[in-house]
Amino acid sequence: MKFICLTLLFVCGITDSRSEQYEVVGPADPVFAVAGEDVILPCSVKPSISVVDMRVEWFRLDLKDSPLVHLYDDHEDRNTDQIQSYRGRTKLTLQELQTGNASLKLSTVRVSDEGLYKCFIQSKSWSDDVTVDVSVEAVGRPPVITVDGFDRSGGLHLQCESEGWYPEPDLEWLDSEGVSLSSETTETHRNTDRFSVKHTIIVYHSGKIHCRVKLKDHMLETQINTTNNRFISWRTSVILSSVLVVLVVIAGILIAVFALKNRAHIQLQDEHRKIQHAHDQLQDEHRKIQHAHDQLQDEHRKIQHAHKQLLQDEKRSIQNEKSTIQHERDQLLQSQKIIPPKAVKVTLDADTAHPRLIVSDDGKQVRYVNRLNAVDEGNNRFDDYLGVLGKDGFSSESFYFEVQVKDQTKWGLGVARESSNRKGGIDLSPDDGYWTVRRFNEKYSALDSSDVSLSLRVEPQRVGVFVDYEKGLVSFYDVKSMSLIYSYTGQSFNEKLYPFVGLGYRWNKNSTPLIICD
Ligand SMILES: *[C@@H]1O[C@H](CO)[C@@H](O)[C@H](O)[C@H]1NC(C)=O
Ligand SMILES: *[C@@H]1O[C@H](CO)[C@@H](O)[C@H](O)[C@H]1NC(C)=O
Image (tube, rainbow, N blue to C red; front, side, top):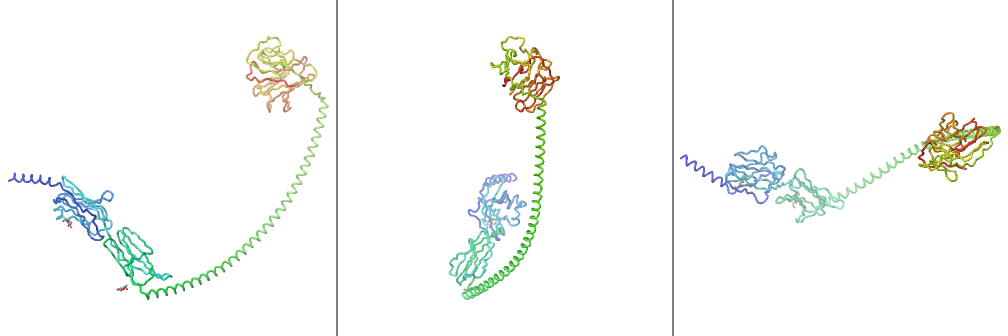
C-alpha cells in the first residue's frame, strides 16, 4: 500500500513538472479605468492550472525601479514593499488563483494609476509575464455658466467653466439648434493631475445657449436661457449706466485737472521765489568774488612793479661787476705781459720711434703695429716705451703744438729734453727729462715731483701743449673746451726741448694713430 502511494506521488510529480510549462496572457487592448471606480487588470495562465503555489507579482513597468504593486508568494500576500499609493486598494482572489486567474482588482482608481503594469508569474521551474496598459479617465464637475454682462455693442459675455477632468476634455458652445459656436477665449489649467477648462463667448441674440464638456464616452452639459426682454433691458440699462459712468469720469477728470493745475501753479510760484532768492545770493557771491579779484589784481601789479625794480637793480649790479672784472683782467694782462705763443710746425722723427711704431711719411701721425719693424736700433731710438720725438727742438721763447688723441686710450705726450733717456723703463718725469700728461684707459695723470692724478670732466679729443721756455712753464690744454689740464711750473730748462708723443709701454691694443695738428 505504501509503495503504491509513493509510486502515485512520483507519477503525479512528473505530470506536475511537465504541466508547469504555461503562458501568461493579458488583455490585447489598454484597460480603461474611471477615477473613483474599481477596475480589474486581467492576467491569467494558459493552460488554466492553479497558480496558488506560485509567485504572482504585479509591478509598475513605467516607473523608476519598477516598484511593487502587489506580491503573492508562498500562499500569502506580501505587500510590505508595496507603493504607498496602492495600500489597501489591490486584491487577488484565492478562488480565481486556483483556476489560473491572477487578475488584479484595483479599487477607487486614481489618475496616478495610469501606466504600464507587469504581471509576472513564477513557479519552481518556470516563469512568464505579460504587460497591461492602463488608461485612467476622470470625469469632472458639471460646467458652470457665468454671465459677465453686456459690452457697448450689446453683446452678452458668457463664461463656461468646468474642472476635475482627466485627460483634457473638449468644451463647446451650442446654440438652441445644436449648432456649434466658436469661443471667444479658451483657457486650460492643470492642477496636480486634473484639468479645468474655461471658455468665453459673446452672444448677440436671445435663445438657449449650451455649454458641453466631453471626454470619450462622458459628457456633461449646462444651458442658459437668454430672453429678448432681458436682453433689451440689460442693453439699455447697460448703455445708460455706461453713459452715466462716462459723464462722471469726465467730470472727475476735469476737477482733478483743475486741482492739479492750481497746485502746480502754487508750487511753481514757490519755486520761482526760491530761484529768485538763490539768484540774489549768487549775485552777492559774484560781487564778493569781483572784489577779491580786484584786490588780487592790485597785489599782482605791486608784485610786478617790485619784480621790475629788482631786475633793474640786479642788472645794474651785474654790469658793475662785469666792468670791474674787465678792468681787473686788463690790469692782470698788462702786468703779466703775456706774449702770444708761437705755434710751431712739428714733424715726428721716425729715427727715434720705437720699432713697433709706424710714423707716417709726412711725419704727422704715429700708430702702433703688432710687429717689430726692421729698423736699426740706434742710440736715439726708444726701445721699451712706445715713444717718438719731434724732428726739431726749441730752446727759446715759447711754443705751442696740438696732438689729436681722439679714440686712443693709451697715450702720453708733452716735451722731452734733448738728453733724455730713451732706453729701458723710463719714467716720463721731469727727473728723466720728460714733461708729460698721460692716459691709461680711463685714468689721466701727470708725473711731477709725484704722481698727480687728473680728473677731467670730458675726455679731451685734442691736447694743446704750451711751453714758456724762459718761465719754466709747460701747460696742457683741452683744445675744445679751452680748459687747462695740467701745468708744470717753476722748471728750469738748459737744453733744447723736443715734442714727445707715445703710445704707452711695450704694447697697445688700439691701433688708432696720434696725429700732430698744425
Ligand atoms: C478573473 O478574476 C476576476 C476577479 O479577480 C474576475 O472579475 C474575472 O472575471 C476573472 N476572469 C476570468 C476569465 O474568470
Ligand atoms: C429655459 O427654458 C426652458 C424652456 O425653453 C425651460 O425648460 C428651462 O427651465 C429654462 N431654464 C432656466 C434656467 O430658466
